[in-house]
Amino acid sequence: MAKRISAANWRKIEAALAADPALFGLPEGGREASLVFASFNLRKLGKRKNREVELDFLARFCARCDLVAIQEVQDDLEGLRFLKERMESAVAGDGEFGILVSDITGEVPGEPGMAERLAFIYRWRRITRLDLASDLTIDRTSVLANFFGNEAGLVAERRSFETQMARFTAGKRKTAPTYTPPAFVTFVRTPHVAAFEARAANDQPPLHFAAVNAHLVFGTVSERRQEFEALLRWIIFRLKAERRLVAPNFILLGDLNLKFDKPGSDRGVIEERIRHFNTEAFGDPDRRRVYFPFIDPHPRTGKVIRTAARSEQTFDQIAFFRASAEERLPDDRWRAVVDPGNPDGFDYGVFNFADLFARAIKGKPYQALTKAERSELGNQFQHSVSDHLPIWVRIPRPGFAPPPRV
Image: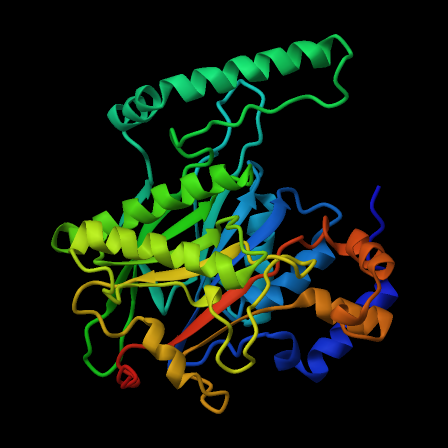
């Protein structure tokens, strides 16, 4: 069983966080003139038992956000509800937050599998629900077309899998093989979509958006790319039909498991796909309607933000898909207005609790730890807290300030 952080070390952690929350990327929260959106793969959030201290700690971050998309929620919702209760305790307001959660995905009831839910926690008085709440599905006709269009490759891969499984069963292979589809058929875990309204001030119109909560497959690089491209295409083509939508904008929040260990080259691959779908949907590869802030180096530090707790990957993303006339959601030009002196302006970041734990427990930054020290520390928090870091984006709240001039 993995070792957990001791009570004495939790006291050190709390003291270090209280001394300088901004050092670890904790955003200012609850400000009237701005909104904070967040995404967090909170590893296997199920029962609260033996996890109360960790969830109470994570509530400090979540309570500073107006909308949090959470991945890896288990079928048992006890831990999620406890997190919400602790968030409300943190802001001293019972009923401050609401929960919206999907049913299980990734598993067929009655059959073995890894079931997950996708959840939103949102601040009632700033963010209200609209009519839409749905799975993002691929229709059967398309699933069949995906299968039959790639039948030869799918069948060949299946035969190879069966051959390797027979060798494994016979003791001629040490590890069990996995079946890796050579082409996209449908999502392993169905993304969840819900429409929301961000209330505005000074008689300005509210901001309507559909939030897409996604936890894409972690398989091979090819599988990851297949699901990401299918999701990207789905959202962009829905965006094209903005006049018929419940909400004309989309905000994508989730663990997309993108290959991003080499940002210099991986960023170009993502941008190329955005340009491709811009051309296909809008006839213009350079339309500024899709923006992934976390694939660029942060304009203040010049460094790419890492979201895996071990600091080697950027799996988690928040992305904006703007309606044709929408100026209140960011695009890439907003990078020029990131200003650490403006607590209500556009900014984005990560709550780096791994660095917080390293400084509080080991007395030095996470990046300064040896490989052995990182492993020892990770064993204390990766299961009970998470192996992902939560990410956030702050935007000016509609009606409090005009969109930045860029």
